[in-house]
Amino acid sequence: MLDSMVTLNSVIRFNELNPLYKPSDNSVPVFSQEEIEKQMAKIQTPIPLTYNHAVAQYVNVYAKNKRQLTSRLMGLSKLYYPLFEQELDKQGLPLEFKHLAAVESALNPIAVSPMGATGIWQFMYATGKRYGLSIGSYVDERRDPYLSTVAACKYFKDMYAIYGDWLLVIASYNCGPGNVNKAIARAGGVKNFWAISRFLPAETRNYVPAFIAATYVMNYAKEYNIAPATAEFMYHMVDTVTVKNRVTFNQLSKALDVPREVISFLNPIYKKGVVPGGDEIFKLMLPTNKIAVYIANESSIEKYSTEELTPVQYAFKEDDFIYKEVKKTAIVKKNETLKQFAQRTKCSVGEIKKWNKLASSKLKRGQKLSYYALVKVPKPKEKVQEAVAAKNDSVQINVTDSTGTALASNVETLSKVDDQTEVDSNSKVAEDGTLQLTYEPGKEARKSNYKYHTVQRGDTLWNIARRYDGTVEQLKQMNNLSRNATIKVGAKIKVPVNG
Image (cartoon, rainbow, N blue to C red; front, side, top):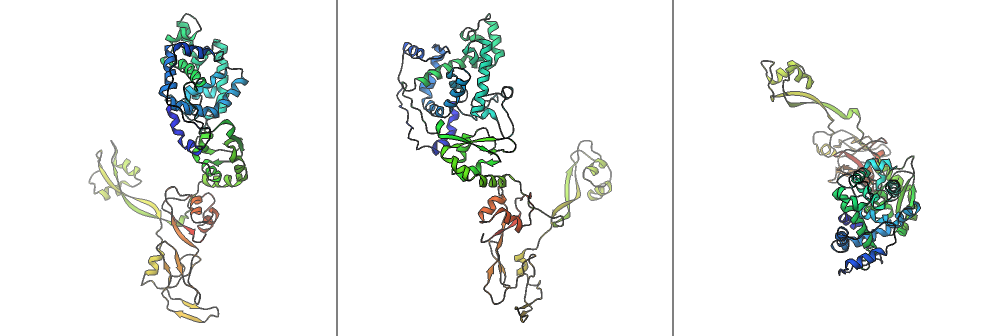
């Protein structure tokens, strides 16, 4: 799991100027077995820390082979360990259990194992539910560092009440109490990890030594020339605020000037980048220097989040469509009769025979038959540019001034391009779609206050409005859109020219 920490680069870059960051010395001191045993004995914990060949292998992993990633693991511990220690102390549990999370997930709250164990404490779905963690489409409390720590502490206490041995508690956390019970029975009833180890799954036989090694190396990291890479966040550098309504990480990122990756990192409980809001009260963790900024912009963040999440649709009226007869082809299925084929294509038997010039009603599997179907398609709309350029489609009008005096007649004109606009022969449609109007005699030519935008994949009314310095409400009014309308890719909608 240590390798999963390389995904935190965006968070590190955000806080890379942290003065507490110190690169690790590349030299690796070597200690004898006797020296390590003496050092390990000095760690004051009720958990029996035994040094043997299995533990030595993992000491080598944490102190030598993965020392740079261990350095980053120590940096993450500045954020999570104070939280763990607080709850472990509250529950009367050994504080060294905090290192178990490092072994489980490398302190990655969104880690997911191949078996589906999730979060910083790697809870399986059923175990998480049994210990009160809510798991849904938007929120997974297994990914919440605090809530999952509370659940883990409950598990540790339950298992210690059964076994009375801390190493067996750790073993059961990895493979489940069922496997530990079977191993105890095969070992003759003795409740000692090392005595029953050979009867446990291979992963668990390595899991407990890894925990002992991690506890030792984290306590003696300085002696191994490993410095904590505190380039992410420390416990005192973050705080929480209460969120009442839905907000998205995208809007939080824009309003607070914090990378979205950082907000995700600090709030791993939210699976889809959305704080759901609603009847429940949710917490949002932010850098302490951004708390006041969030409070000051709370209403606007909620507003833009709502617009981002509200589905919009380009509203078509029924009379905007026509039904067109389209020729289609279908393949005859196995044992399908002509009657069944006709029913499937919503045609009559006679029509199918006529269209395909069939002499009999017998069909063969895989045979291709043609049929006609009515398809609902948008009604073709006259293009302004083509209409203005048309030579034979003139409309006779008389242009007058305010007194009614005739100024021109027989003007080649397209009248009423839409419900509000009349244009004369000097009107043009520019390449960017802007309509140039000159229908007011004696006045300087002017542009209309809108042009057309073709909806692209990923467009929303919100980001289109921002692109053209308008508002969502303005777009809805200009295009006669209902409140819950959605826009479709390829649709053309009016957008403001000058905001």
